[in-house]
Image 1 (tube, rainbow, N blue to C red):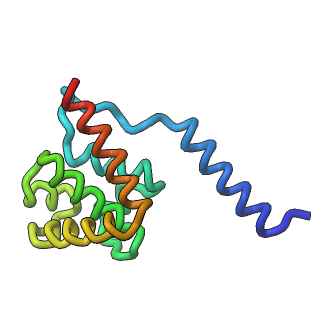
Image 2 (image 1 turned 180 degrees about the vertical axis):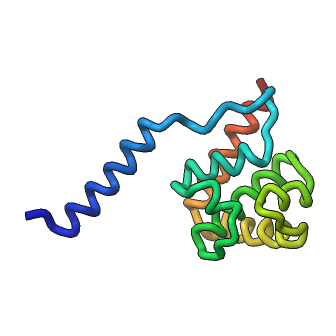
Length: 130
């Protein structure tokens, strides 16, 4: 008989195998990082859909991913506040600044969030150096 814990383990394994089998996020166009590329990478690393990150959802998972996008885009200076907001579903510049401040707080308190943003920042910086 299959128990609830067996089902949870199978689901986790299926997700892991799917991640390994899935292609990594698309390569950057012309070696330049765009906000859309950051959204795609954050979606891939968090297991969310792109639509979840740019959509109106306000739950914690969606906000964390959105905050990671804001933090990375501003840290790497890939776009203006207005451009970042436009990619993230038409949000205004003050929303992007607020997300950046909250992302700074999460980086200080949450090792998983820090690791995600650092890993992606190093990936993009390595791309700029090549």
